[in-house]
Image (cartoon, one colour):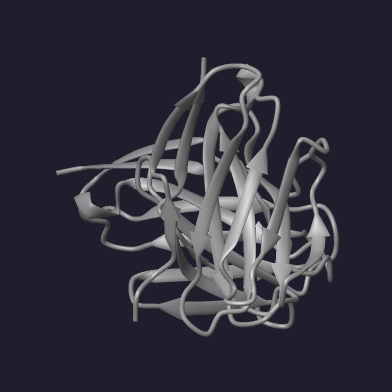
Length: 112
Length: 114
């Protein structure tokens, strides 16, 4: 079964609005990553946050991590139509070398 | 620097056949992982290879196998194909093993089993 559960499954917003996606996981982790996937394409790494970090920023992206609640959120500010994609969180499942466990993803649609 | 290259990008097979997919990692990357993506099950880990050794394996039947060559290129094979094997197969590379950082994904090989 998937380690990560994402919420919402789908999100539709207007350009310029902020988009927030949430991810929950089940076991202890060393780090959590977020990836983006345009339809039918490969995944692109967005950001990695380590278990001892609470917040991280990269451009218009802000990620938070709450290890006590086993949850993370990804905020995209001032969204653009080009942000339309599926977003996945992925955890390392605690030292299971080379294996990432992905959530089911959030499908984001940004309307111009 | 060239990205991760997967071939073929699309292929159609019939039940019972076998298929081999190829992945060339980013130059200098020694770890190659494979994932299966389907609408129902999402992204699932198949296996990881590092320095020609399988380091980890997901929960897939023995029909799914892989290998890595000395130049870090990797292949995966699926034998006796079933309809449920229709999926996007994604390969990812990284410089090291152990989930210490990001994975670099290829564009995938989309397999359709009829």
